[in-house]
Image (tube, rainbow, N blue to C red; front, side, top):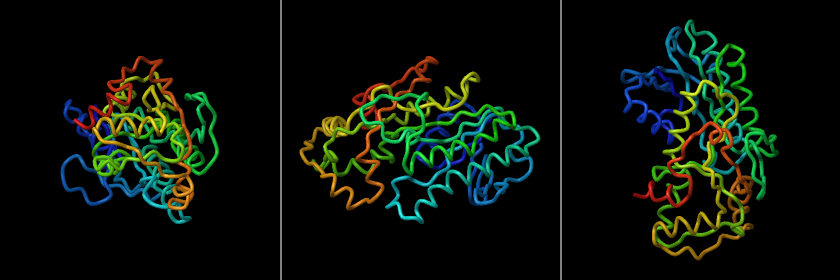
Length: 298
């Protein structure tokens, strides 16, 4: 299989690229700079045609679109929100346009999304059948998925990856937390009762590969572990895995004062289940938080 990947240098993209290459698959990395090695194709997500040379994607079997600026990269100012939207919606629109022009287009597009689609769900469990929620991230995810839809009209199978918090010691949410937790400064946020829908990077990569191979699965797919945990449970689990105490608490007003609108993502609760993956027989290597942390901290 020949797979083209946007966002190939990111946390998930780099892990996916390595896993595919290790199995002898041919990976084409879409990069924003001049290509420096074989297997790289230049693209410009700010151009309507993505700036991809004619024929560069001919013969690609699948495209995995992981492009997007980090959600937690700073306070959500008006400018930052524009960056978050453009890096997802504009780039996806450009990519889909390029795929439509390919003489031999791929058969499938796996396009990024997020569990932010559901908005705050409290302690209510939701799967892919749940409607879209409200708020900036819900609007962002909804528009992001809509940007991929024209590819379906071009004849591609389109699956949108509603990813939860990806756990990896190399970055994401876990990376920045480790130094503080190793010093015994781990803290629950607010009352700690808000749910976190997470997935290990190993399972995320495995799920993407599972979707590449299963032509019967399209539409939204939740990439989350089957056992969401509360913030308090996550804090205790990470501290326990590191054999450190975690007795502190960051009050909600302090979080709101420091992060503004972004604080809603730390204080809000999402209890999202991977209904479609489980129904299709996907086997999680790390179905619970303890096994995920053990693997990532090994």
